[in-house]
Length: 352
Image (cartoon, rainbow, N blue to C red; front, side, top):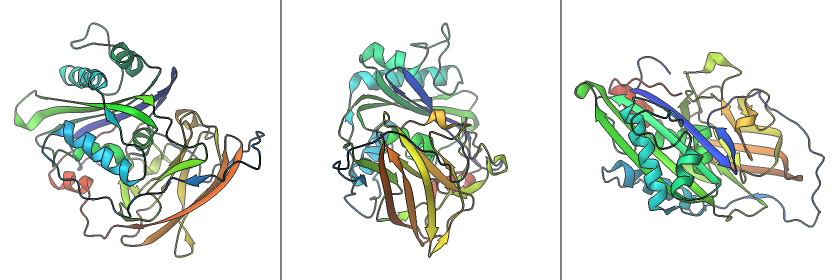
C-alpha cells in the first residue's frame, strides 16, 4: 500500500474445511479457464445466485464498541444478501479474544501463535477454536492496526470485508461466529496497536447445492468502486505492478467451501464495454490452492462512480454447468470510503 496511506495494518484470513487450511489473499491470470469431467444429471435445478432482500445495504448505526459493531455489521450485510445470519457463540468468541490478546501482547499479526509467547493458546485457528468448541470446520479473519486513532469502530471490519479473500471467508456458510478485540498503547498515543479477530465455526448447511453467492450482489446500489490492492497473498500477485495501488473493487463469487468450482469465463462489463480484470480461481497456478469453492476478478483500474456494471461467470460447480449474470451500480464519487478517511488522517497501512 502507498506509504502515505493508513496506519500500519496487517490483514490475513483463513478457512479450514475438515483439516484443510486456506489462507486469505490471492492472484491469478485474467480469464482463467479449465474444464471438468464430472457430470450432473440434467434434472438438477439450474445454478443461480442467492436472491438479496434489498438493493441497498443500510447505514449501520455504530455503538463505538468494535466487537458489537463488527458482529452486527457483518450480519447486516449477510442478511441483506439473503444469507443466514451468524449466531454468536461464547466459546468461539473466547477463542477469538484469546488470539486478539496474543496479537497485541506480542506486536504480532496473522493466524499462527508461537508456544511460550505471552498469551499463547494454540498454534493455529483450528487448534484454538476446537479446544473450546469441538469442530473440524473453522475459519478466521484478523486485522492489526498501528495508529494514533481509527476513523471509527467499523474501520477494521469494513477493511476486512473489502479484501476479497477475507470477504469470501466472511460470506461462507458458517453457523457460528465470535469477535475478539484488543488494544495496547505501547509507546504513547501516537503508537496505539490494536487487533480485531473474527472466528467462525460449524457449517450451517443453509446454502443450497444449486446456489452461488456474489458480491457486489445482484441489484446492489451504492457499491464501492475502488480498492487498494494490499492483501497477502495478493489478488494481483501475477501482475505485481498493481500491488499496493488503487484498483477497481474486487468482484467475488462463491459456493460452499467444499464445492469443486471450475471457472471457464469471468467477465465484468459496463455499457457494453468489457472491464479488464485479474481473475483468480481454484485452478490459478500461483494461488488457486488458497481458494475453496470461490473465484474473483479485480479490475485493473478503479470503476466509474454512479455507473451500472454487469458480471457474467460461467463454469461448473461440482460438475454441473452454470452461467450466471448479474448487475449492480457503483456509489457516487461523493461517497466516502474508509481507505480515503484513513489517508486523510495520516494513517499508514500494511496488509500481510
